[in-house]
Length: 378
Image 1 (cartoon, rainbow, N blue to C red):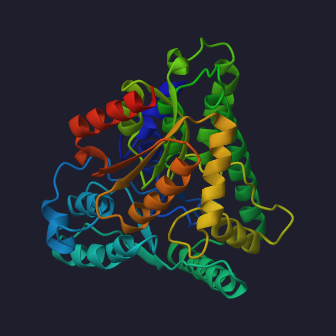
Image 2: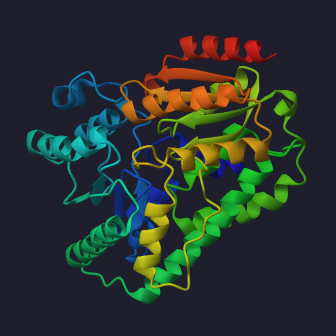
């Protein structure tokens, strides 16, 4: 059963996307976890979290971004310019950070210079940096604006009932994914950190019905499997910059650890939280996706993010933290320094690790530093 998740997590496309597109249905890519995928699902569109995992060159994206920018949005732009995202019928860009904000303008310019590299539906989705009443109203307006554009461009009607059905489906998926989180944090875990992370990534690029069905089949099997051979290794949490590369987690585990928790965009951050089914759907989505964020782009919420990591550390018995950030990622690079200071004071060893995104990662240097960190903990 794991092969389903591994296949979906290992590349930018998978069998489900191919079948979906071949049946004449639409796929919309989106860049940020602030955007509720339930909106697309309620319109009969497959939500697809944009990934740059197979990029081999920065030739196109360097021309628009320049060299001193996080390589994640540059990889997305490179794939777009190479027309490897042609299965998308649309894309929604959010203000996760300044580099991601610039992806909107850079992709539009790339579309002018490389015809066919930008989908017909292309939308900019703004996200506030606070969660006060004004910001919540602003965010709800952005969601309603996106819904109106989807309805107009795709000639669909996103009804309240459809939204409630989509919310229920995604809530169920969150509950199942949280079971995986609990399984990998056990002392006698039956699943590795690499496999758990593969499942989380796969959930962002598979139809939710197929994802939920596969998880419901996998979970009973876990109890019958042998214990993870790495259970006796150092118990590590990985936190920091965006990552959808399962090879990074595999590298960390192959160095002699077991990843029992993460706090990474694409990972299992707070999947146990449920969207309120009793509230009006758009209002419920607004509060859930804005108020539950643990991203360092949000102002004045460091203590909330620290407490979340602390709770995960205590629940999973974490012995050390790898605080990784993509080079030129100011948000996570800065916050990782605060985490290192505060967790080291608590006696929890931390490794600050700067890297490039995905396939551009310097694996030899990374492996050496991780091994040295684990030796320090011995």
